[in-house]
Length: 294
Image (cartoon, rainbow, N blue to C red; front, top):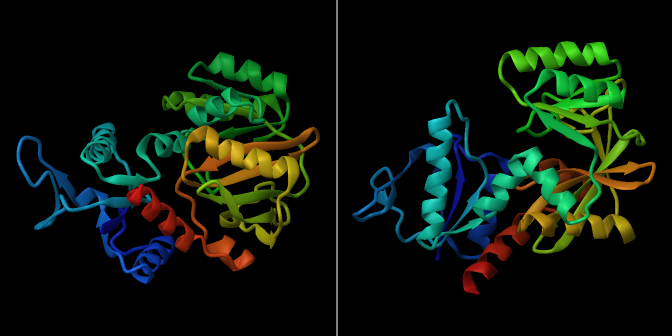
């Protein structure tokens, strides 16, 4: 059995290293591959290779990142490469379509809503007037990038004229205008980590002084927590709705109950492991091995 970890850094980052170690512990042959260095052929073999090594014996792969994308053609090539690999029997974790859904906040939210998962009210548009009028209706709101994680690029706004200036700048560069209600919450949110249909760890993330974002990348601090009842049900329902095999789910304790704000299909877990003392890597590896043996 040969399983790869796909990223696009020269050296594996911490989650990639932990997956590679867990694969070694399971006695599985493993590779670290940069997605930009994987090539493909159609009409002859080997179909896939990296450098001088054929990858046609690859059974599965963990897709940790699509890498830094600088143009649309590069993005299409990388997505189609992964689709091509799946078509010829390489089992990807997470599978490509759910992974792409989790990368797109718009697609994530509408799929969650379809399955009855509580989410914040949100407007997505390319029309400045529409976005501005919606921001006036909301009052306090969050403007986010359509694609992104760790809270980077998210802005809390509590005045429509400030919102207008931000939205106008985004519109001038043809960016989608993603406007979301601000859900009142304690100075914390919850990150739950799900593998193969079970919550294996969860933590509170507390915002630092003077900051509204709770992301650890923004200076937040973590504390272990145990999810039960409605919170547990909603987390599992969210992951099931997106058909992910593993995911990080971010939940807000809103005035009317839990609200899911993000589902990450390639989450990091270094901070989660430090806080909870649970390393998801062995569970993630066992999940893919089980899928390969089915």
